[in-house]
Length: 205
Image 1 (tube, rainbow, N blue to C red):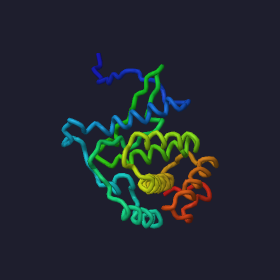
Image 2: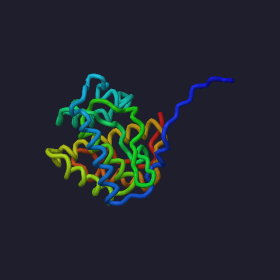
Image 3: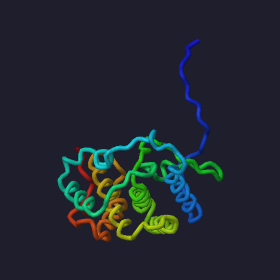
Image 4: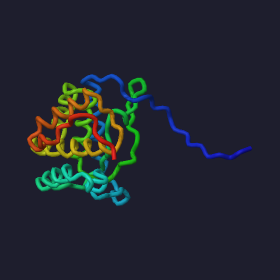
């Protein structure tokens, strides 16, 4: 008899397909709980990485994005004092009956919760739509004290730059509606240059 190792996990459902305000609020509360993991915990075991090197691979090959990111990072100080998920999006939240489960902790690390939130909100705005994106952001602002509008805009700009970088490196979903939403974010964010506007499917490297 072959003795092959097998990993058994519980069945936690499928990625969320339908959203409403109540579900968005629960998703926000779950990420806030992740960020509060530091309370009464030994954080020494949680990895810490250089922010730019980790979230912006091969940035040196994209001078326009690098220049924009450097300007943004001059305006803020990246913190690495809280546990973050690193890629909190609807594809990494499973739903089974009334239970939601967060998966894919590959990018879990000590980091800046403002970035973790901004990346998640950005993805909702792009892949779900502006209505839910604004609703989602509003729920975070209600629960996170001291997260200023300027911080939110700067970290949204950082998230947008990362998405553009990843879109150049891989085959992200880039239908016309996706590109339109990204461009609307670029145009509405005072920290992003209009030269970043996407004119078609991004090139691959």
